Length: 287
Image (cartoon, rainbow, N blue to C red; front, side, top):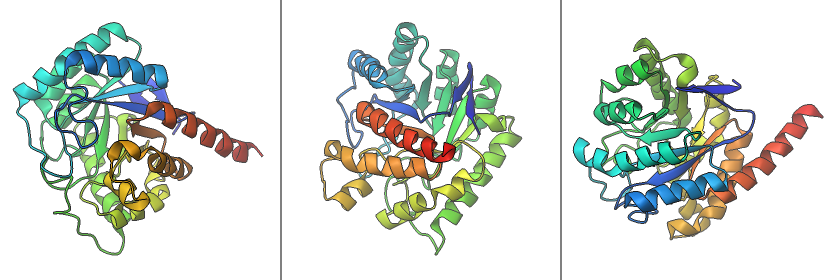
């Protein structure tokens, strides 16, 4: 597994790949409202690329832990389309990803040149999503979660047996198989265990500690731990924007256990930390 296929070609996994987060929402848990205007979102995207982001991941619907409200198709498109169009124009060589669970949104942004669809429901919430992505030959991220948009960030469905990662792998494997049956090529599918989604802190820890089991499936593994609640609980930091240190620690451990793609808010810090950690891991392989 040396690359991840997306629409225009492939992303090499010979070093950590960073997805810089651009939330075009008024209510995301960490940076809600900061980049809600198209102008500010585009400027944020440019800054993240300068700091080392390989891909920009644009989202117009929050799945925050408390009070997330679904938005309709028209509103989600109103939020993200100006950002997608302007970033495609100004940063034509930077692949764009859109975080959505709606096939109509995916179809619209793919028509504008978006390369990747990041579905936090792993295609559970919209049966048409797989066919849309297959037709466009998009790269896809299938993330483990349970429940709808307003529930997946809560603990409502955070019920697991003794083998948390075993359950996560089982549900992701089924989602990946369904995606392939719908026509999405295996090389285009990356898997995200959904840290913090329908998972208490102990569940997120169990998943991260067993990440090598997910990596052993032979698909690119995406990790999104940036500024999350479990990082705050473990480090005693209540303000999401102050959880950079804990985020870096979790990302470096995930890298050592097989993750290669990292969705982050704080790109500069992540780029530096992951590149150093990667160099150390590579030196072990060549020793």
